[in-house]
Length: 292
Image (cartoon, rainbow, N blue to C red):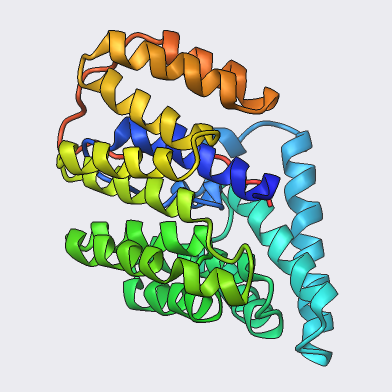
């Protein structure tokens, strides 16, 4: 299993499994999407140009420059990537809107179908503006090419749960698992079955189907006794259920199995006080961009 895949699914476990009692949400790649309101008058009334204002002006100049290039060369990928980056940075400063990143993302996704990050970014952007069918189609485009793409799977699952379609989400993951052996036989490593099984367990936990969730984690643990991810997921669920003794032994086991870069976070999670079960209206906060 590659480190990028490993790192991503660990993030999903640590973020989503804790909040599984209210549902699984897309882990936003573009954190700036969560707040794109313009700055308040008080923030812009300061005398003189602040470093933030200088940066904003520079980014706006970059946007105009890239737009001019793209008027002449609509498929210039250097300009498309530069425009996307500049607009994302403006979003992080609460300037512009999400719609501004969709056009370059659509072009980049079309020009680079093998680089699925663009399509996943596009799906998340469309989901943020309420275009759920557009988001679903973007995820399907990725999954048609690679049924085991973890980011697209997790994004599609989150979208289905947001639409109150948990059975569809579970069916998608079960179908992926049932075809994993065949897909991996022809394209080795295409489907990370352990990661998909853990995600399936998390979806069950989101629906408060705890026996099914624990069974999914146990199946993943039986597939590979040396993989720490299902052990960690089960530990977190047991802790959330108040089964501290059982959870502790699993946290210790997960920490022993995990690569060094995850041990501190696992211990921090194990030692944290159990949080109360969130209300049905609670939603996960934005997370940082997963590593590629």
